[in-house]
Length: 200
Image 1 (cartoon, one colour):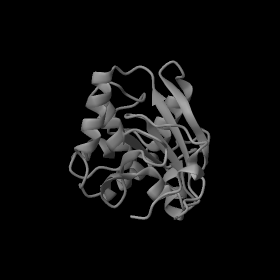
Image 2 (cartoon, one colour):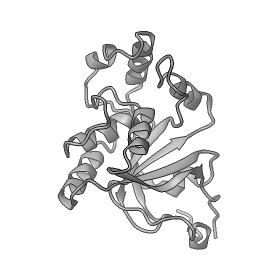
Image 3 (tube, helix red, strand yellow):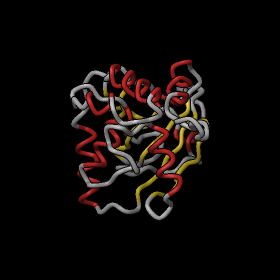
């Protein structure tokens, strides 16, 4: 694995376990996810992906768990340091240390599982029902998670929720909740591009 240049990320914040990171990509899939994340009359979705920091430290060393083709455990900058994806980080301020451990352990329990592509379809089908929690309710298998499922269910293990049922949550639901509840979540990093990753 190539070494990272720490000074490249010198202005980036230190991350802590249970921090939530949210991203806004530029691909067609990212745009479709944002489109089907909002109901008629709502503002456009800001983000299309979400994950959890499971091992804190300097920004360029922090380890995250997120659902891609499988659920991965890796350094945040390894995936996003070279991309045109914007990244925001929010920190829970309503969790005890024990609850943080519960969230992290739950997130890590998903590592290696295959991505739940059918869950994306059920989110889209519910969009045609004006956001009703119908098809998503029928697809509650934990074996095939999507990104918001991992975050919402990990937090659910600590009895924390994002204003919707964990099985119904999408990345923009989580974004709206953390942004609108500053007494529970504080912004660690606004939604911006990361400094480009550089090999030494």
